[in-house]
Length: 287
Length: 103
Image (cartoon, rainbow over all chains, first blue to last red):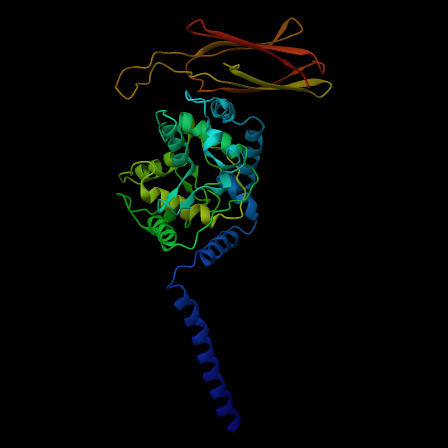
């Protein structure tokens, strides 16, 4: 009898201990913690796909099963982005009319730096993406900006990504409340449903990667930007991150924002941060 | 401008495996541009691979072949270090040719 009471009070004590540990992380989640987000995000994907190595998520749908992986290996022998990559290399080396070049606008002459973009510019108080930085470089040197979606912009970013292949994403969130706000804003954009189909980015790329949407296999959100820009067979050409975001929005029957709108810059910041540690694999090829 | 043809030919001793990627719009003539104007047909009509004075692969293509076509085939023979000549002609009379060394 006495021992029964003892074990009952022990059970109460245990329940109280469980309740306390359950409450603490929930309370911590109230304040934004990007590092914890990134850990949880990477854990979610590695547990959902236990056979896929963390580094392989950068190959998108091609990482999802053995058959797709064989297709990817075959494709990489003669990648369709080759022409764009070569054009990008030539464009990057060619000086502007004023004699300066892209190399003058970037740290380390623009070589091997893709993994540091986007970054939070504390002077401007906003996120600066690589595509934005390239057009700003052009404008600062008296050249007309390129379209953000494809062609020249895709070629330039393809070359810059290629020189950074294998380098892990290294996105930093400086100790500035505005940087954290940009991150949170990107996160909100990523999980907010929109469009006639009422999809969020996460509906496809977190809840359903590896599943088919019509004939396509959905890519996991983890590592999705590491492969940018991409040659999509569906597009019959190259596309940038801007093109990916805007076409995703039209496909869910929403109205896309302007390329490089603040929301897109923030969502790129958020997504890139979550893929920190995964290598740059761009330019990529996708079905 | 650099060549529109990328080739890789590798000999295994008995056979040579050839892979080629060609940059070409391959417009079928049935597509309209954003203004609604038809895009005139513009496609490769003949693609030829020549080794040792002989054609080893000839393709007669039409508008159904997709943009930036990719070809893979193998042929008997072919020695490492030998030349493989590749050329195409399109329906507008434009052409390009290149020579690749068999590896």
